[in-house]
Image 1 (cartoon, rainbow, N blue to C red):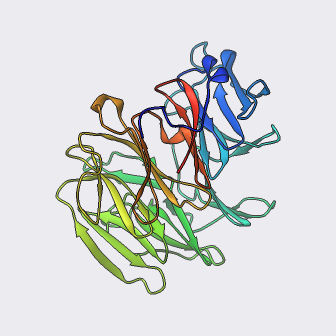
Image 2 (image 1 turned 60 degrees about the vertical axis):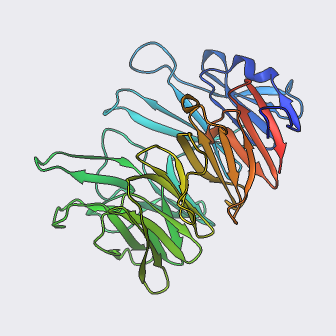
Length: 357
């Protein structure tokens, strides 16, 4: 698809006041950061209908408004910002509802029907026992073994220094929650992050194997992960682990859709797939990839503009077929898919575009 030439619709008016291209789109609304720290919402069919839905605070360090990030997951819009210093500051995440109201959320909360599981927003460093659960509108309660740090890729160096980063992955299979964990009692001789199984009824917590794993994906009946350069799949019903393929270079990030594994290679930052092992967008450096759609039925990949690729957005379906591609630039956080329609903020033209597959 040529750059911005065959879109069904092109919307520009409300985006002219956006800051830092902080925009996200659904099939109903455009959310963007306007002037004076205001988060604005405009009707995608009539952009004159707009309103402020949130006021960003002034940062406690300096005199400017906090930097924020708008993003969409399954047609739900979220606003995130960090206030204060890098280590002693705090994270804040809000759900922006269609009726104009906001709801405080953890940036790492996971909804599984009526059950919600979460780890708290970052405030001055993580601690063990950070996993919680609630049912419906009930209260949050601690979940799992309190000796473990959950939801972080954590490591300890040879001098005893430790640190890590939050990994936004969890999966519930019946009563068993799968999430990354680290033993903060330091009884684990390997001192590595692994995948843990936490029973939400009994709090029983167990590591599924000894492999060091920094992230994983759930797809169908399997968990997928990589360790030491090899991809594995883990059958949830019986715990059987099967190696899939060893790749020659480090895997930066990966996604799985209908058993198809896509990853970013560390050598050229390119996008590869497990079936062909080939670069899917020659000369392009992958910026991000994320499952989108009402049932996560599409994989959206975006690419860095500095690498001058042929395509900067590519969308794959469950069969690995390319459904949409363009040389226009966007970020995964700017993009939504509903049915067979894609909505995204076009960084190239500073407009919102609507296209169909």
